[in-house]
Image: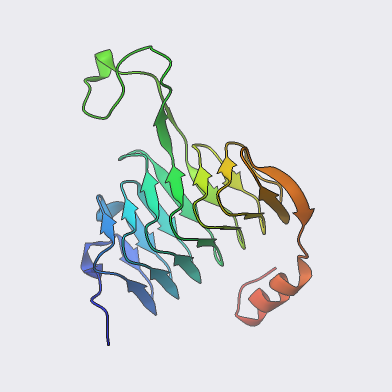
Length: 185
């Protein structure tokens, strides 16, 4: 059974061999570019600009928030597992003003607005929360249910709340496989 697909003409650009579920929602599709060999599953909700590279999977029920000035950038061979939250803008909740996007700027709390970046081969497990300004270093992985407030080191595995490094990952095999697919080291 073929699943209904998204109207790709709404996107800024897209490559080939992609599937975006008709049940994915991009509030600003004109700010979204998708590379080749990409799957965006059912229930993905995105309010930000997004630059999605090649060989990427965004699993069901992922939320990407941050508004019109927010940005998610995913380099090649990256993944986001089901239920994760990517936050590129957040109210501070410290009492400087009211919280929420419907509040006039003069009465609004301070908002931290910084891009979230996945470098090549970075991945996150299910139900991970990534906060504004985090860069996931090349090849780093974040385990399920972790909370990430700081950028990660390359080829390192992180777990916990807050996320802490627990183990290193081997680099060479992934780099060689990427080269075989035409992506330099």
